[in-house]
Image 1 (tube, one colour):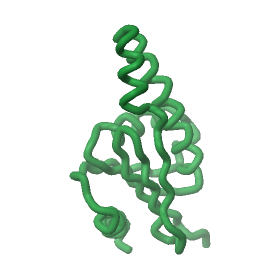
Image 2 (image 1 turned 30 degrees about the vertical axis):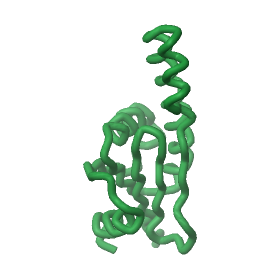
Image 3 (image 1 turned 90 degrees about the vertical axis):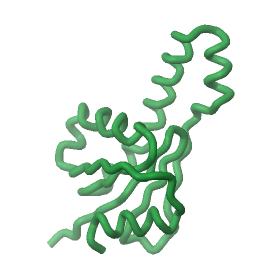
Length: 125
């Protein structure tokens, strides 16, 4: 029988923290290239340019996360911003993720230990 692989991903607008609860190794961090300076630079040119730049960089960030998610059967997206919902909506449009169960939960800014405890609690580990 195949073992269920579960993971939690804590998201804000610039960071994704992947927590594989069965792994002995440390957690993975992915960082978006969309920084305050990038936003400021684009906004100085035009608001439409800033919006387009944000969309392009978010899509690149989501593609990085996408490649990690394909290794799991059940994912928990959580964090303090709307980024988790945006990622969920992005993934829902892709048929590759049809067989992966994705849960979305709101949390406050929490410590690294609280993140791990939250994921373990969600998956009853």
